[in-house]
Image (cartoon, rainbow, N blue to C red; front, side, top):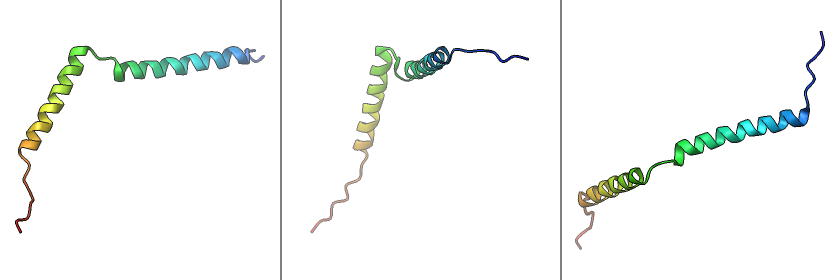
Length: 63
């Protein structure tokens, strides 16, 4: 049985392309959002922060 002969440069480049594509897919999933989604998330975040700030207890000591 003979071993399959491969070009190491081509194998290396193919492996790098595959890794780059998987990284790109992860970034698309993480950062690729519509403008409306970003605005909705920002508004929700601001609303929750303001809601929490409105319900904070003051821990000031009266001297």
